[in-house]
Image (tube, rainbow, N blue to C red; front, side, top):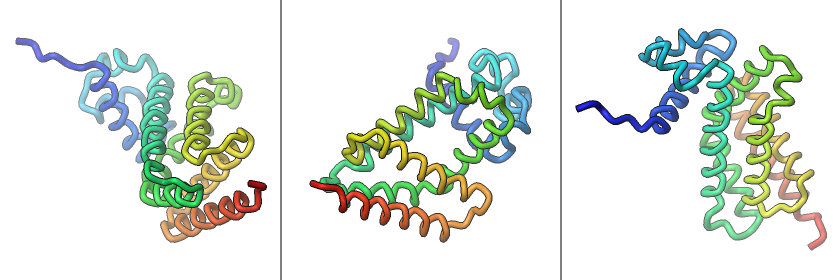
Length: 191
């Protein structure tokens, strides 16, 4: 009897394995054939799920975005005040430092090795970026999209700084400082 494969689950498993490979080797330094070899599947099977390396990357961005948004929503369950929500965000970022730094390194490598217009006009990237902003706004109870985008930009900046440094102490300090700055900002807003 032939084995029944859940294509979407298998695709998701491949993407998660690709995440680690891309984090280790870099987006630009690996071909689709090398990825298929490392994953232990045929090149044909790889192209069946991902017609190109760029398509694989886009699907990886979407998969990670879904995963991160769900985790962000879960992070604030039980947090009632903005202070509690910011503390939960701090803990979430610090607890998942390695994952976020790998994700930032892969994304940076992709951007460096792609046409700037291609990156900025990509509908997948725009949609996922908007999902992150919406998740931050919902998690923290924010209504101003400019503030939400600025928080997202600051988080990305802290992560980008760590791509080259990889110092957990510095990362934790920067995340803590970011949360303190946000707390001070929100405390000064009129009620």
